[in-house]
Image (cartoon, rainbow, N blue to C red; front, side, top):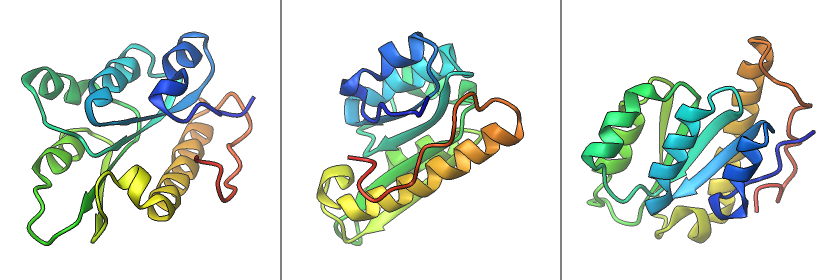
Length: 151
């Protein structure tokens, strides 16, 4: 079975709780729920891809050390003085966190810079699945990296 649920509102929680390995994508205010899901289901959540975090609350900060799945944090920087503090802290406090800035991109990056977002996300999904396969945790065939697969 291929990990097909791509966005929080596409039923990622139901898919993960049904035992299907899934890459969980969340943006903005949904990041807290995605973090909780990854903590509760580390064998089912293959990776987190988090876009444009709004802020790091005390609750979110307390969860970050518990995240064990590979996590990509993407943020747009429409100007050179864009505030990237929340995104940088989010990625920096997750053990397997990776931080990517899309320079010159308008917010939100996942809808306004779709091509860059898709390229980074697709590459990260491949890495996360490779790590899971190496560790014997990947239960399904790898997700095909087709253009437009992350819609």
